[in-house]
Image (cartoon, rainbow, N blue to C red):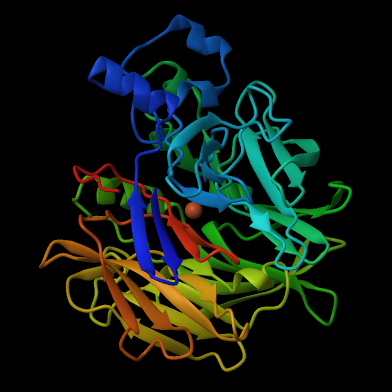
Length: 430
Ligand SMILES: [Fe+2]
């Protein structure tokens, strides 16, 4: 986890591994002791047949960060949150948020209402009775209400939307075949199959009661991430997402990790309008044909109308779908235009994060970590959110390389920014 703290006297960075149970076990053994999303467990155990699959996977706590008043949570889709110190990022241990039992996961992609601070999240239980657990927490992070929805299948769900009074899950036709995982023959990620004949299943929930309002089905597609959700003037749910035509993105991600990218998996920004009472799709439109990922909005607008979506995109001339992200774009949903920040040749950006200006809430700053492949350095770049096509207003040097990462967030009102990292690195600094 990388944390960057902005103070009156300057900015400081702190960068630490999350000392998870799996990390400590590996460190003590001097070798890999457990499987994870893309890794086969090297230690077959007969007892695995009687455990939920999440207990067989190492929780790297490496996908996203949830800052609370008194702690930072490091999250991964099949784990419990790990608690870190907000300032030092030292690991304090796992957190049940008051209610998580041993078999329940708390996924990486939560939604925090931009106005009330209420937090919603979910977790898939992969066992004989697969379930979608949905959690509602107060602003302290404590789970106040939860429900378990029977799934009757083993899908991959990575993100969802909060849209006014609704929570909406789009369940793409990806299904887990658990047997090769339990037999230690294949990794979890390699057991996920694409079944377009199943379509995309839609679940609409009332956010206050967590009851299912409607279920629907639509065309098959895959999405890792949503930008935002809200209810429009006609009462329809609007969902912004980066949509893929199939699940080739899973192979692409594996090849990224192996530094041998063969598979093109371009995703583009789409907007879907949905009737909440019937879960029927009224309209699905590709709004930005430029390939991209990691769509985010102003944190204060999560769940409500947001004009701008920020996302990582490709440089002009890039091998779209195979390359990594070389630009940051701001998409304007009112004009359909995108403003582009070009990071430069052989430089790559992480997810953009928007920090609101403390003096003018309509104004904001876009932060990202840039890796320069020529100089082999990493820097924090800060752009004026309204002038992405200008030079960054600030570049902060980091003392080591920061690998291309997943998700970050801004700690509202505290001048801190945390980015979770996906890959191990030989560099470590504080
Ligand atoms: Fe994600």
